Amino acid sequence: MDLVRFPVLIRSVYAAVDELELMFPGRHFTPDGHMVGSIGEALAAFYYGLELFAASAEGHDGKVDDRLVQVKATQAKMISISSEPEFLLVLKIARDGSFKEIYNGPGGIVWALVSHKPRPKNGQYQVSLPMLTRLMGSVPETMRISRIQDS
Image 1 (cartoon, one colour):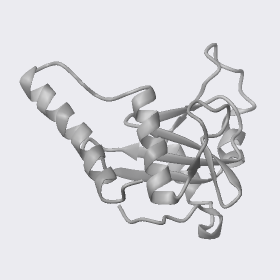
Image 2 (cartoon, helix red, strand yellow; image 1 turned 90 degrees about the horizontal axis):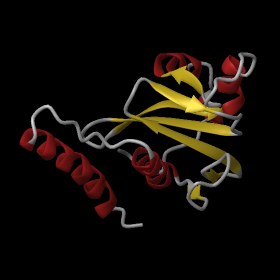
Image 3 (cartoon, helix red, strand yellow; image 1 turned 135 degrees about the vertical axis):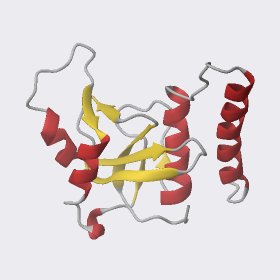
């Protein structure tokens, strides 16, 4: 991975969105779906050293320090989970391509919030970012994945 070019490319995606929205007032070009998920996984690989699995691998997106990791990236106020990941990394991506770490810890802590509830029709439980931020406060620094690059 090109350590210099990668952050520039991520910022350029969001700069293009801003230009398109100026060009077409009232239209939204917000990256979503697979694109945001893939950007989140790439950010995790770059900033946390995540060794990525094949795209759309079942359950986990990669591993670091022998921990299986599921990455959830969002530009919204919630994430969705359908199963208990061994480890969960949640990143909130800003419009300039920067990100904020919302949750970095054992997946079981988050799964315990939803697993006792009836499964939604789409199979995806919703968890708010404020709730994840509160849960993050209970995760000791020693249990988190360390960054290998500064943002």
